[in-house]
View 1 (cartoon, rainbow, N blue to C red):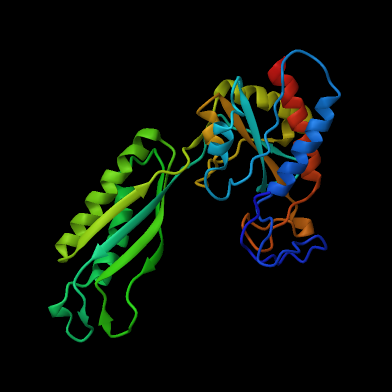
View 2: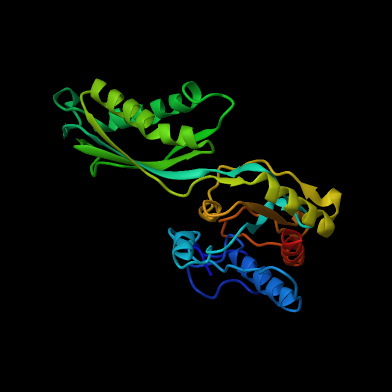
Length: 309
């Protein structure tokens, strides 16, 4: 369920047997917790209905959207999700009201110039130089246009252009990611990025085409649902095991469900440095302490009862 194209290097006896593919984010553990919670809840009878969602394709695109389109949120009044989290120690649960994970949009900028000989740049319009200035200038949006009390990340992750050391190419393509928490700031970013990139490129005799493709919205936990989740979590790990996690600029399509019903996304601490189980998510050495599965399962059962009380 939702493996990643990574060659596993955990050294575990249960490591992936599929070459170049591994569970590097804990989604196999999520399935285990959901199945165990379903078994526990099946033995209980009372008012209300609990629906457990087993969603594929969080790591790709469209998993949550496909689930919603299939009707899984029809008639749902609240939703709670969990994610194994190697940034928190095993035995803890991270519950927080408000913004938790960022909206994630994709950025593509094509800088077009006029190619030529590397020894005669004055006869060209160099898109490589223009692209380099664009990359640097984009950071001024974050540092000089975004209010310091808000958060935004603009990262250029790839630069493609040219095929020879002594030839100035006609164009350079940049791709990256734009991440925000605030919805109004998110809406403003495409214009800001386009203005900056086109202005810089034109000043250097080139042109820039900017595309920002919307991805998942931000995960913003509902205060009332988070309060109930916190009470359920305290019954599982005690007050000492409750953590209010820092918001992360990572993305998560749980936000798609939150567009249909109020909800709360909870981090299940899964790291155990003493056992070497503290590698970051998406690392080829990622693994988690399986004691976290018990904590997560107990929490799912408890929060179901709390929400139906």
